[in-house]
Amino acid sequence: MSEINVYRVSSSLQYGRISPAARIKDGKRQPVFPDDIKQEDWELYPIRLDENTTDVNFIPYYVGDDFVVDETAKSLLQPLIQACGEFRPVKVGERLYWWFKCTARYDCTLKGRLEGRIGIEELNLWAEVNRWVFDPSRLREAPAIFHPYEMKTRLLCTDVLKDVVEKSGLVGLTFQHLWNSTTGGEWVKRPPVLGPIAAKLGKELEEKWEKNKKKYGLLYDKLKDKEGIKLI
Image 1 (tube, one colour):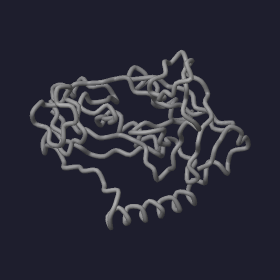
Image 2: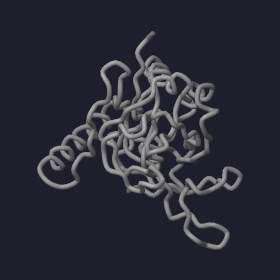
Image 3: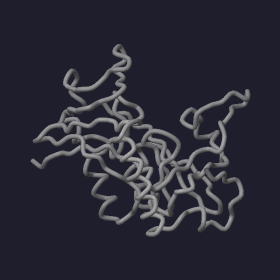
């Protein structure tokens, strides 16, 4: 029986970021998050575009592990992940991207075996998981991409999705290895936001921006229609 791997899947800030240009408000003029808007109420909202955003297939969107995909990536992945969520349009100039709002939550961990910090114990919601432990029998039936019950801001996948993306040559998704059915879980920790390590990571990010800008080009520079875009 083949080994099973689990990864955290996300886009990376080294490719920039897209987010709504202002706080979206509901019919009562109350601020709401994109995640709270029903699909039938979704609109083409003005957007903010990080000045370092490059012209790649997957770009970080809003917060957490969420991302938008271009038409090429959508055509490739839709048959695989359509059942796991919704593709919502995001207009960037004359281009149309799609925010993949994952709606699949899947319970596949071994309770009592995770290591980290619990946020709300009675709901089994974790603030940080340093080592994941999964049930292999559950993973064999797992969706192609899903939120674990313990952390709704995390997107996880197995080799099913990773192999398709990597073989396609599309750019922008990263896969952080979390667990292997033979060797177990790897220790992962959030990077610091202050101190010398944070400064070093910040410098490395700037270097990646410069490298990606030369390799893929800045998205803003390639757009003919810049209406509705706030550059940050």
